[in-house]
Amino acid sequence: MSAKPQDHEKRIERLEEAAGFSDRQIEILSGELAQINQMMLGLSRRFTQIETRLSELNDRVAEDPGNVPPPHSAGPDIPKDPL
Image 1 (cartoon, helix red, strand yellow):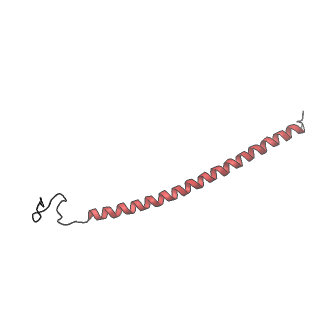
Image 2 (tube, one colour; image 1 turned 180 degrees about the vertical axis):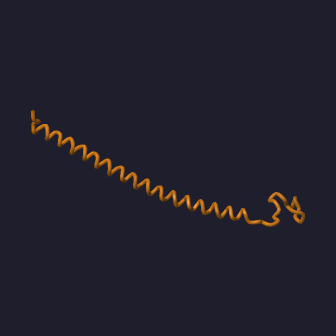
């Protein structure tokens, strides 16, 4: 038994529809991946900036501030009650 030409045409049509659907899905996913890639690049830049800033702050903390009185201390020269 051989298949009818109509069956072949229907089968080819279904395959073409499936291929078209797949092509559209690939386009959509490609666009979404491009957006994710841009977002990741931005986050990577921000992370690098944060690392740099944190390193700078750590360097400052590591430096010896000298003999600095605590902020709550007015010191012996300054009256605690200005009035």
